[in-house]
Image 1 (tube, rainbow, N blue to C red):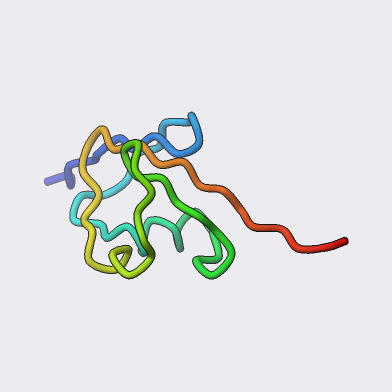
Image 2: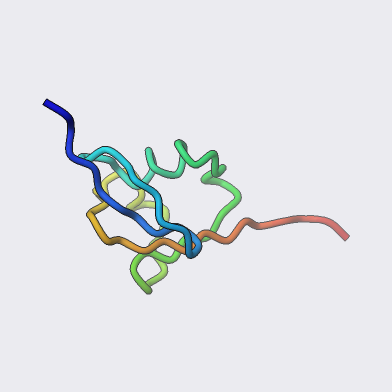
Length: 71
C-alpha cells in the first residue's frame, strides 16, 4: 500500500512529502541550513526551538528566508 502524501507550499512552490514529517526534517530534505534561515510558518514567525517538535500538515505554508552575510 502506497504511503499517503501531503502538499506543503515552500516559498510559493508546492511540494509533496511523506506524512509524519517534522518541520526540521522537511528543512533538511529541502537542503536549508537551519542556522542560516528565518522561518514563517502559516503566516507566523516560528522560533527555531519549535522546529524539531512541529509536525507539518497538509496545506501548510512556509516562507524561508536565508540569512546572507557579507559586506
